Image 1: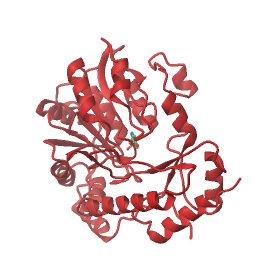
Image 2: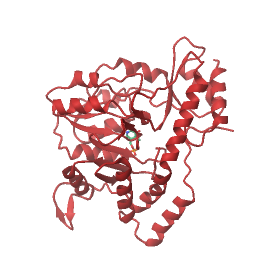
Image 3: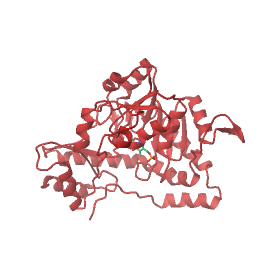
Image 4: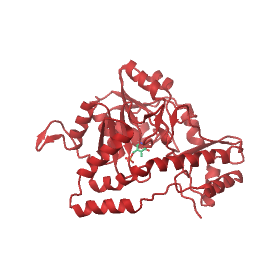
Length: 366
Ligand SMILES: *Cc1c(COP(=O)(O)O)cnc(C)c1O
């Protein structure tokens, strides 16, 4: 049986809640969006959550309410999905890149600190694969340098550090895309403890309008629909169990792969509650196969795997030619993009699949 890298299973509760919205006749933003915002805010322990139409929009809106001017710099990770970079450019700012650690694949505080200058307006760490970056160090750096903090938590719903959830240090941006840990098909959530930011996000989302035809800013249509919210709401009650299964699978994979010396298994750093959006190994040099050969081998055996991500986020002509993209040196990220491969860790995977994945990797040949 093929083992897919992702597995979207929604179930009868989602069918019922979407049908109820269809039958209500009110399908745009309404009470179900409000319910999603309230429930996610409670789970995350944050004061405000604002739902938008996707995770990229969440990042753009978070940057837009910070009023960035041309030349203002946002420092982020070079090892991320392209949406992180696109959002910075859409908001009219300049992007630059701090190097990551190969332990957790996240930007390090030291690397961020080395790039901070008088043009730095925002630090934007990405909680990659569902593990929170060093937010204690990074928020201290933001305070001491006067930079704002936007967290790309697209992969990190309810991931935590010392009991505090992703999206509660700065403005948190979550994706509800189909393959994310929580989904509405397309959707995004923005979290903040700042009343003023939350207020501006709500006005921005709705054409800059507070009361009908009273415009306060040049806004946009970033609204989510009740149809989408109805897909996500029933998943919230089951999310803790989903994360528990992901953790179980990650631990079992780490154990099953422990004796394969050319494979470096992922770590959970001190104090982290990992939500395992992806389980990512590094293929060491000098083993029987390299990363691309391992992928070819697994694909032949119908074991799903993926490269998240195959290149540094700015390593494309369209960004190399853009003067708003400053390409700092990122040797760790350069090494990781060449050696990373993600394996199935979702709740549809069980002990039998883990055995199969580990055996396949152990037998890998060119
Ligand atoms: C998915 C993702 C996004 C964008 O979210 P969409 O909902 O697809 O727009 C942004 N950043 C990261 C790290 C992501 O994984």
